[in-house]
Length: 357
Image (cartoon, rainbow, N blue to C red; front, top):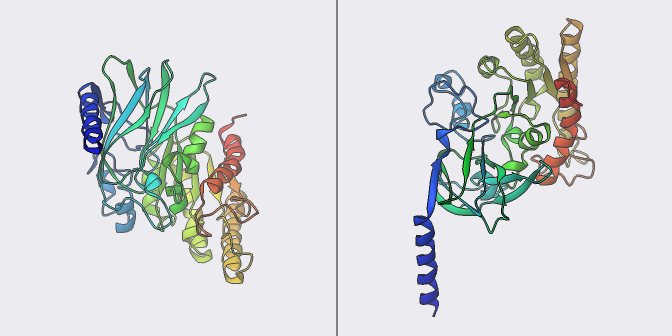
């Protein structure tokens, strides 16, 4: 009986495959892929090929991850499937599940035009094929599919049943928010890609996002600043303090901001303090690390203000993850609750910087 059930399931799957029409997302493009017209080693790399040898080896390696990328489409399909090939066989991490590291995350607009979560995936191999959602209520909808945060994407196809309407939506031409930061910006430790705070803010503000967070390597490097300056951003967000110390903040912050301002005189820039370790209340050395870092950033901010720097904004870090110590996975990296709280803290500052209500 079990063998019969298995064979029947296989037959149904095979039949469904024959009835699917597959679309390669590279045919219409993904959002979050900056420098879109420049040569890449792989299509889903975050940095163009010219960055290799200019940025550090660690940054270059991490730039192969598809963090922050998202593809949009409309369909009236009652079933949506996806096929994606991953760069690395490391599908998860000890503190972050495969669904966030290597998975896809689907959102849809509801009848009021609001983004609502719809489906996530549970990757268990490098070459994945999965049903994202089945039994969908009738009607044409807009969808947003987020790509893996901590793995590279080699290919991605979206499938719907033959006969279903499907409309590919090209990346929006609006200027993007550009987030430069650490593992937290990169997306650790969201349970799924749509819950990293840059993705949350992109949905709330209805604006494209480019994520150049690099785990352990967001250090205000000039070479990264050179690349950022090429992007015509709506706003630059610099959130690197967790990977720095007071000395490097003092050395690099003012030059990086001046570098961006020289290239983009009218683009808002937001400086972000580091969140505090959730257990820094009981660990004096960690508390002092944050105190020193934040003092260095505040000094740089005041120096830039005194020099007449305009459109420069500042976000304090003490309450980014809340005050109850429940906002992290490991004391450092936000869990899903922490990312929502962080988005809540970022949103009013970004609205002010962008001139939004």
